[in-house]
Length: 362
Image 1 (cartoon, rainbow, N blue to C red):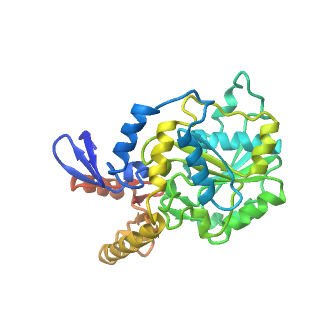
Image 2 (cartoon, rainbow, N blue to C red):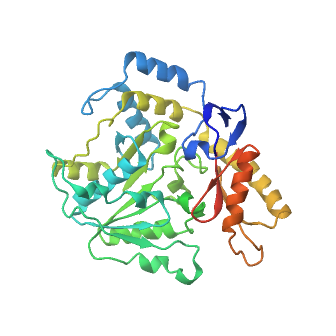
Image 3 (cartoon, one colour):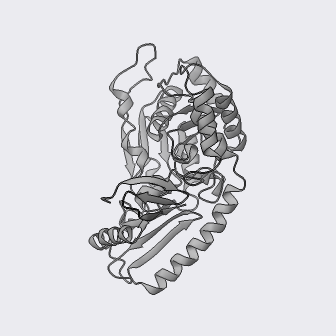
């Protein structure tokens, strides 16, 4: 992409040269209700005029209302919420919380997943006024992706480790090419965690608030994580993230001096904007309906073009795998790059994942 984006309209990116590009990346998976939604502009304007930013230790009505809203719609038992800025912050906060709750230090996560990029950064130093959460240098045991045939032993790998504090995962591995965790795996992960006095952290940065067909993707398998992290869709493109956990976990780490402090924690204006997101009606139902249409269209393309080796879709989380040969499913790395570039030239933006899939998000 060499042209500059100067404006956005609902589902389009408008370039400096006057072209319109269909945004199938949804602002890198963040724009849940579309660009320039009519409810968003007055919300931002009113926040800027009346209540824009406070000291991080202070609370305002939008922050309290959003916490109440999210804990009311989250899976049963997730009763406490705090708000930060980015997905990286929310996941580091969740891991620090898990360290302090369990007294352990090892982390196990899935690859490829965005969460694995930042989970050790918080171990570099201890902030004055906060307490050490034990061994700050977390080891990451990388569980291999489900799609590698000769390494299909994921359930056995749940027994890895000695001082594990948590298992961290996303319900759908978007960065890997919209890879869906196999049915029963999330439940087995939760059982494995509790058998070893660990916590299950689930990152729903891209899937939360209806995009995957349920308000939260963990509801697809009826699993309640110990800690749920949200970001991207929560702020509809503005930097807002959340960590949601149980009252029992929050009380224990509170007694042990837990603190996670950032300048833009509990942002009044962004929490108010998020309330606009959450107030939209029938998000999950609309996502499922639109996803069915998307699936049908992609299926027609797959029947027509042999380079589409697979479609992976749940509601508006979708990806198509590009292959050299439909029978062997050999991946077509260079062709996919050229295809993505040509799609952009023709007015369609789609992301290439690490799994050579063109990723689509509504």
